Length: 249
Image (cartoon, rainbow, N blue to C red; front, side):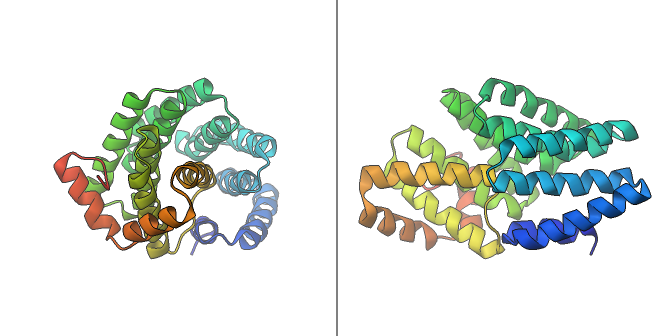
């Protein structure tokens, strides 16, 4: 496996120590060899670690460095990951209007590059930004578009995130029972893939869980979460897309 494959797999498993070692070694190697594409990837992984560690300032600094290196190469494909991180950091820092612009720029770049999978994931992130800006109807539409793309293209790695978005919309709709079931579906989907949530979605999950617990209490949350976890994540998502309904409705 390449550095990128190994480091990204470790990150998804939550093995941050392994990612740190791999990214540090690759950064040193790439700098010494003036291997700019490899340096962009290594810095990208370090920026993601900084986000997971809660240091948004450092994450933005590293991602900005990665973007500068990418621009120097003249290969726009290398700009994709740093731009994604910068948008995410901006959103997590609460600058939602700027994040909206950055996510749209990322979508436009990936659309031009033919990266349909990344367009799908960035639509999900843009939807969260719209939701936090109070644009619930716009967010609902963007989440639905992302779900349809997930099912249509068979992007199974994106399934847990579809449920995170759906749960957030359910909270906005004050449908806390459905939100609790969707938490269970998301948990089951992540477990089935052997992954942990990305930092921004982990933050969203924590906020959703707090809202549901405050409304329903611990026992009802546990019961409804268990009901959701008993469902098949892919089949449930595919049925919702086919019927044009919210998952878990």
